Image (cartoon, rainbow, N blue to C red):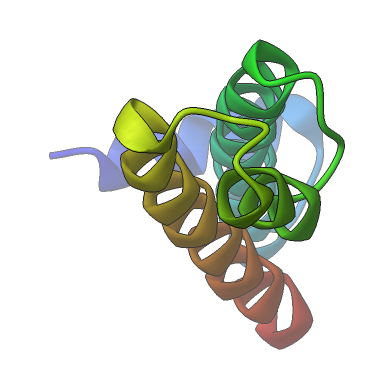
Length: 93
């Protein structure tokens, strides 16, 4: 169903079909990574820190309330893991 449209777009853009698909995937992954990094930054800024290590240190030292900071720390770790996975996809494209 999409195949004819992809062919048409590749001819219109004067780009190989496979190159078009790769560019689309890259664009999608970049947009996703941008969202992940913005969410990570938003969480860290909430605690006035610049890294997950600094957030964890603040929690352990008692400078930052444990709740919901521990949950947010886990979320930051998961976001960073997802960003690394996307980087791996970039490396394979």
